[in-house]
Length: 539
Image (cartoon, rainbow, N blue to C red):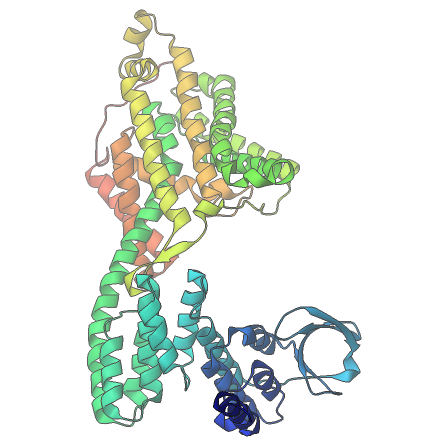
């Protein structure tokens, strides 16, 4: 006689085997097979059951469905992942991902998909990856569920929220949960509560969602709640937009500061109108390109250190070019500003053509190291990119280094002495010609360093410097000729004003307004924000 325990187990196995699929948990193989249904409604039901199952082994199959790479074999009706190569399709198992051979395209039928099924599949993929160990995947999954709410994910989202330790991802999950209730809840009170939860998050996506609800929801209480939430969200978004404009302005100002701080030395201190300054910036950018090419071919594992090597090399290359320009041409033209302007303009054309002959006229690719790639998002949809933040910090560090050189070193003391009184400095034994060359080389080297930074945010081409030369002169003149702190304040002021004007006047008209404002300002204050006594260079 069988024991009661064995009898109970046998009865349970019999019950599981004879139960219809609708009354027991479907296996991954059964859920996968359901994707091969003929009708779109049946496929949608299958995707929803996959999402409710929580089985992340089915994610590759859904990814293949979205990519148009999910097939069904005609002989056994089993879905497989395929990649067409001519008339043959290379097959992989839809669950394990392992390659299982190949088959003629005639023996397979591609599983069709429409836009509605595509949106539901994206939401299902999001739900299945909510518990991934990778935070980036969990964040992407939460955003996918928010964009495509569907039945069966409410409990999954609640469990994900309870387990989540990252505050940012938890917020994304809470938004997805509220969007799910807003889209699928039958009771108006639940939808009003979902609106209240969404109102806590001021993002453009939430604004768009509530804007649609305010227009289309059938219940007046829900529409009213959505309208009230929209008013509050718009106010917060406007505040964050202002913060974003300030950051973008500081970012632009830091770029202008890098491009102008070298000019503040050559033009502000030496009184030389150097129209080739932009090309010295361009030489720094191309130095960065050459250094990165060496790292790509010789030391690919150390690519993240390429910029560390490029900065001193760019300073050296542009500085040597600057010294050669000063010793070869400019020293013969001191006191003749028009001739200096024309001569340096000709040098700029020569440098551009030289670069075109060596590197070609097309843009060159300059990569970003891993520590400068990416961004982080704060409230209101404001995204701060790492490369811009690094450039802001870098530009301030360059300015501080120049200030230290000018105030705390013997060379800086001699440079200031020659600036204030050339004859007295010469009588004290200072070699004024040598100081002129080194000062011009310093300004040119800083322009090369600026080119390293600009290579991370702009196209590296022979015309790179032309985009910044006029703005650089504006910054120097507006801030005060020869004053470094005036250059800093002028760069940041012009950058912020530009970014606040752009949404209303556009980029080009905004620059025109800034130019007019600077001209009017100089009419009232010709020596800029911070006046500094200049030097009259004698022949």
